[in-house]
Length: 201
Image (cartoon, rainbow, N blue to C red; front, top):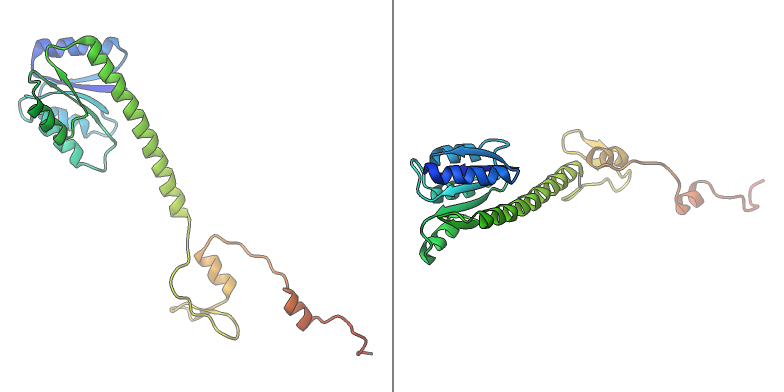
């Protein structure tokens, strides 16, 4: 799984890179917030990001806001990295769409724990998104009849509006996935093919 590291401080960036790469993640490293946002918007881009709060171009919090505004993209797990650990900052970050926080200087064990948590969330989100897409595809294949249908009282043909009148079987075949076979109900069998009752010679 890819992890984006966005930090303009060289030492912090080096520590993050070493820890995350040793944990087996594929990493993408940038120094600016606008570069981080562009990377997260790429198709197939990282789904986990560690974002420094203060960066040139765009702040980490503003990156969170922009990512959350794009509801068409797959979910990104966003971890804000900050030297500030106050309640107001955390509330601001959460309101912007951050999933988690790390305080500088980085505790390596805590960083790995947050990454593993993010990985679990992303895998669940991806599985859910795949399931939703499967259901949408299935629904697109289901064709339903709805509304008022005008049917002839005598011949039972359906008014199509543009093509005049259409046999019931043809209409249903064109508007559903049903297939047909023919038979005789008991009433029609008795009416049209009566059994001999001794009155005919």
